[in-house]
Amino acid sequence: MNNSEAEKTALQMKKLKEDMLPKKFSLSGKIWVGVLSLIFVTGLYYYFFRQLREGLIITSMRDYVSWGIYISNFVFFVAISLVGSLISAILKLSNAHWQTPLTRIAEVIAVAGITFAGIIIIVDMGRPERFWHLFVYGRIQSPIIWDVIVITTYLVVSMLLLYIPMIPDIAICRDATPAENKWLKKFYTFLAIGWQGTKEQYKIIENSVKILAVVVIPLAFSIHTVTSWLFATTARPGWDSTNLGAYFISGAFVVGAASVICAMYILREHYKLEKYITLKHFDYMGRLLVLLLLLYLYFNINEYFVPGFKMKKVDADHLNELLTGSYAPLFWSVQIIGMIIPLIVMLFNSGRKPLVMFVLGVMVVVGAWFKRFLIVIPTMMHPYLPMQDVPVEYTHYFPTWPEWSITAASLAGVLLVITFFVRYFPIIPIWETAKEHGIHPEEIK
Image 1 (cartoon, helix red, strand yellow):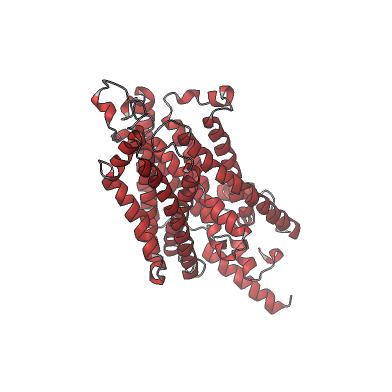
Image 2 (spheres, rainbow, N blue to C red):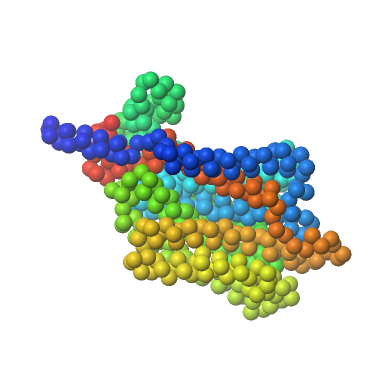
């Protein structure tokens, strides 16, 4: 390489680092962190000082509805965690190179989601100090044990899929951090694990990512299938379906893709990343989301049409409650606002512009959360063998303020993890972007 080429490469790398290296919080960022922290601390108070002391009696869960908003929130977190395998694994293995700026966004959403999925399960336990009994006394015949195993495994693999490709960028952060900022310098040095940027090290990274991308796909499908089995193996109307596994997976792909779109827009606008998260990325993600919404619509039709055609007594009660009863406004809002409208709008080119996509993404994500609420709660209200002469509070369910607060805290926790990640790590892979710009690995400094 001659001097002019070396200078051009150095300028390219300097520009990439200026654009992508993490930056301190602005005033709006500090306000964002403050609001999320307040929500999180409030939820911690209600959990540690109310629920742990008084028990689950502070919730609205009773003998009928033993799975409430906590479990619907768990299913939501499990769903958004699938985005890591969708963007980082499936698109990577299919050589869809346009996904490069989106991989780390997807991976950190996946890790944050699956982490809080595990936490919210512990929150839902009446005796969380006995959680370790699952590992000591658990029986492999139980779907709950399958879920614990696959969630733990998926969390480990997702963290590796996030961390290993990030090592070269952590080394760039290490070298760019001033010596006077000692704790941050040590932090990056520790995580960089002696990275020197040799050709052999890059080869190890690339091979490791390929292996993890292959491993994470069946794991991702397993976690959503096993979660659906927790419902399908329970004798309840609305859950007694062989369609539930595919239904959960298709819905998870939808909410995962929508959450990435929302994150793309916020990061693009706040950090001025228009050169890296381009209109093309929104267009491609819009097309992908349309495909996923069509697939999800197909499984929704299957989920409701078959029991609706047979109309067995208990299934009929459940469906009538959803379609025309007390849950009908929420049910139809979820279908129309969270699925049909975004699907129709994104069929047109003008519907795949950044701001429009962000609004539609928010609609899909919010609709997906309430969809998980509808999967859990109405079904619990219609058991095959109803109890007789139960107290009136058993026959309906609406979350108490402590439940809402703890649930909001878990959602705030996911957003805080993503926010602090963006503060200290490059959210767009620097070395992979440099490679796409024709810079050889050994020139990435």
